[in-house]
Structures are given as C-alpha cells and as structure tokens.
Amino acid sequence: MSQQYVEPGSYRNPSDDAWWRRALDATGATMQLRAFEQDGREVNWSDAVMNASAAAAMGLRGNNNERWANLPSGPLGNLSDGFAQRLAEEYIENGRMGYHIDNTEFLPNVRMHMARGDIDRTLETAATSIVTSADPGEHGERWHHPDPDLVSDVRNAMSRQLLDGRYADGQVAGSEAVADENFAYRLGYATADAGVKAVNAGIAARPDKELARTVEQALGAQAAPRVAAAGERTDGAGARAASGGAAAAASASAVKETGAAPLTR
Image (cartoon, rainbow, N blue to C red; front, side, top):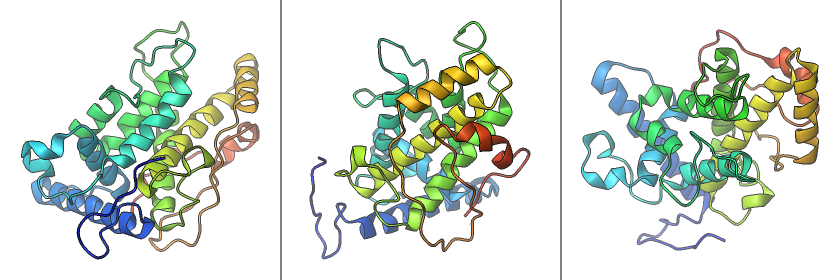
C-alpha cells in the first residue's frame, strides 16, 4: 500500500482522489499552455499530463528545466509509475527482456522517451513500445517497423482511458491489483492496461489463425485486471467500447479507428 500523507494546507492531500483530479488537470493545462506559447501547438490533455508525469517520475522537474518549471508541486510522477507497473507485469516476466518497456525499480526507457520527446507524441511513443514488445516481428527481431494502425489503436485506447478516468470515481481509474494506491497511480495503471488490451485485440484479429489462437489462449489464461465502466463524461470526448479479453477479436474491426485525429479534451 502506498504511503498516505497530507502536505501543508487544509485540502492539500495527495491521498484524496479529488486533490488528484485538480492536480492532474493543472498539470495537463500547464504543459498545454507551454506548447502553445512555444510554437502554437494544440496538445491534447492526455499527452500533456503523461509527459509531465514521466518527467516528474524521472526527477527532471527539479533540475530547473524551463520545460517543466511551472508544474504543480507534489508526487506527479505517480501517474507514470502506475503506467510502468502494468507494462512490467505484462512484458517483463519469465526471463523475457523488454527492450523498450518500463520497470518499477529503475528509471526506464519508456518514461525517458515520454518525458524528453515531443509532448504531442507522448502516448504514441508509449504505444509504439507496447506494440513492438507484444509483436516483435516475424523473426523476433529487436527493431522493426510496427503496424501504424495498431500503434494508433493502442494510442487512442490509452488516451480514451485517461480522459474517462480523469473525472470518474476511484474504481474507474484503477483495478483490484492496485486498489490501495493513490488516484494517479491507479489511473496510470489502467491507462497502460487499456493499451495492452488494445494491442492484444489487434493481434488476435489478424488473419493468421495460429497467432490468433495463441493470443486468445494468453488472454484467457491471464485475464486483465478489472476496470469498471466510465461514469458520466464532462469533457465531451467521444467514447468507444473498450477492447480486451477473448471477445476482443470479434469486435476489434468494428471499433478500429484509422486516420482519425487523436482524442482531445
């Protein structure tokens, strides 16, 4: 269980979901404003908040770097930490090395690239890592060009989960595996889980029946942590049925979005 604490101030309590919603909103807005002032870019909230959290998790916020100078204080890196835990559970096990995938003990590649890369490509960077780890190419090569449509599906699934969990109750933004963690950690965990489900569904839907059967068996044997349905939305972003589990193969083509602009606030 994560340590619970209250910082000075009547309502400054990072163990409270309501505090986290406001802190993450301010974090995303700060990064969006910086990108716009810098070169007029319209960066969506999902990319902005994950970029900032990755930077905080790596300790970059305290280096007087202008890019993150105005971020709110507090444990903002917890969003990225939860994200990293879910990827480590999925891709770093049984002696398998994750070439791009995060872990929870060392400052890893996924967070580094998310923090230091372009803000508006933060989730795309993470999605590319997920796709190349889940689908390492025909001969298992380390470097290859991942399916851009699958990367887009994974990226959009994670963006949607961030937006859905942004205003939802605590159960929506997490799972039983991290039920005792704070809101940001649970939200990060659920975001990575949405990406894992999306890539598994995309692979299972391919014409390669043998590969599809393998993925179906894996999905059945390792059920993803439960994430409750999102509550009422207030930001107007479009909703799309979440993919995951054995049923994902049948429905993936119906929900696939190609050529669409990333989800925005």
